[in-house]
Image (cartoon, rainbow, N blue to C red; front, side):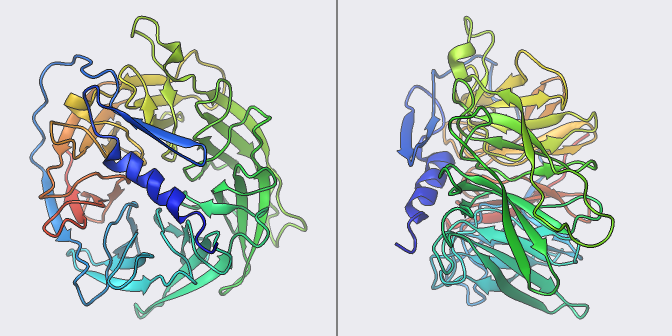
Length: 447
């Protein structure tokens, strides 16, 4: 079936974005293709009353399926600020259930770049990446010629004209990967390639790490550099993209696998990239297990609780450590914030456990660090309405609420944040707003 994985993707996102609820004891579990997410937990968790949000938030656009400009609806990915404008993706659009790519000027006026038809891709859950050739690239989790997702290119000319091209179709045999879910990352230095992960496919069916070599124009070459294997310790089914350091080492997470099976953090050394020209053969990475999450099995009288199911990309802190969140786990089983050094071992990387009634639940977007503080979003929790939050957390694990979503200004943010040219942080919500079809917002973090 051409859109075999569409149901999986929709059920997964629905589960994370609120089908599981936000707090109390009423949790849920939705299993799709071996994946599961759970909202709610043991409830409560202490922490006192809900903090007062910082009054720096502004909704700047309401998504609408009735708009003739086909900008799209239900944005669930982070924006990128490139070449003077913002760019993002949506899961739906006017007259299409396959999604769109849009641009937005700094004054908050969006315009359509491309509406997916299914044949050229469907359901882009992630944002775009600026590559070494000056173009933007993204992936769709479904659709394309083989129904396994696509890689696409957005070219912005010197005159400002924008063009779209689908450059690779996953699922030729399935061994090249199926259903890419994470944002691509550009290679370091002279490596003119993009790297990403697929949720499924590969030789074992549990996902891949892949490389997209940029050959000029719209020509690319795809190669799998690692097949996740349930028999090994490195994890399976990555839901997030990768990050890369200046030494050509990739870092990523898996949503399952490892021992005892709650997901992992891994690294992969790409080796030496030639100073000029292209490698004669695909670069093959060697995975290293950095940490295997233990879930709530590590809890000892609710004092020490590990994470479970990391689904957002990692972020490098200014201290060189890896920072991220897990969607589940922690004291109330609704997510954690963690830090991990790239070398050495730790007993547990978790610095903070989320408490739905106070600060949100199930974080699954990327983090961004400003002035030593990390900012992120949760799709659930925050208050009785459970519409999600923006939170801030320090490297020592001190957390505070920045903003409560309330449907009118957006709901269930599932993506990370990006800094605009004006210093504000920008983000999207897939639900809420004037038309209940999502919003674009900005806020200025207080010192």
